[in-house]
Amino acid sequence: LNVNPVNSNNMSKFITKMTKADALAPIVALESTVVAGRTYQAYKRGKWDEARERFIEETMGSVTVICADKTGTITCNKMEVKHLYCANIENLAMDIAMNSTAYIEKENNAIIGSQTEGALLLYIGDKGIDYREFRKIGETVQRIPFSSEIKYMLTRYNLNGRERTAIKGAPEIVLKECQNCAFGNDFNPSEILKEIENYQRKGMRCIAFASKEKEGDCFTFEGFSAIQDSIREEVPEA
Image 1 (cartoon, one colour):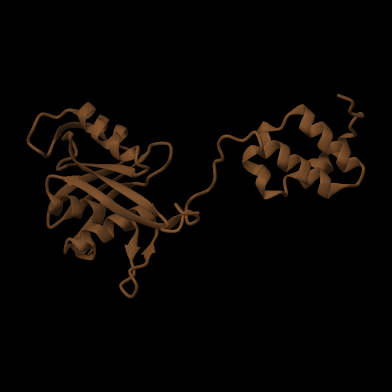
Image 2 (image 1 turned 90 degrees about the vertical axis):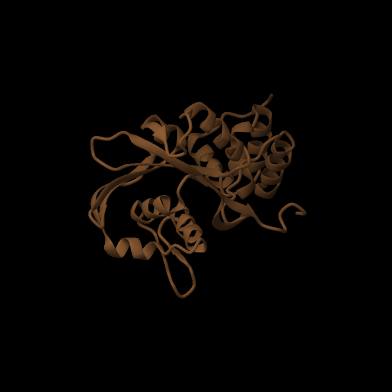
């Protein structure tokens, strides 16, 4: 390959220009020495359009997978609970209401805050349970906000003289904290995770729930939800 020595300042300018092409972002790691050399030669000759087209054509031709931002682009940008598996919807609704910070505007049902939490609040609302009623009489004692490091959210609260701690988050994290389940059968975390994986393979976000009555008690697994941002109707045809 006959490529002239590259001046660092020129290459810096070249790279800056190249990154402006939207089509290059997900595939820049695939460029070969041949493509880069030919493209840079065209750029040096002042033929930027030729350089850009050559790079895109030759590099796109070798692409097998493109990763793109889907939220609100190929999806509806609306999180919805597609499945909720629980033993007692009233207890879980209470935990969902108290162990979250999102809220729903009454006028248009718009979600303010976490879209995932909002989807859960809308779901229990569809079941005839208003989360606002729990928050009116409930008192938060302690809260550990969700973070990507711990992958769960925990809230200890008092409601009508009843102390309760609720936790929600990544199923594998929440299940590690549990010693039993609210369904009355043998607690088998492995089987529960297998069931959850069935929904995850369909692109759904799964959240597990657990609770305990007193500070020294062990957590009881309460159930899980599968939430999805559905694909727009026109996307499959496109």
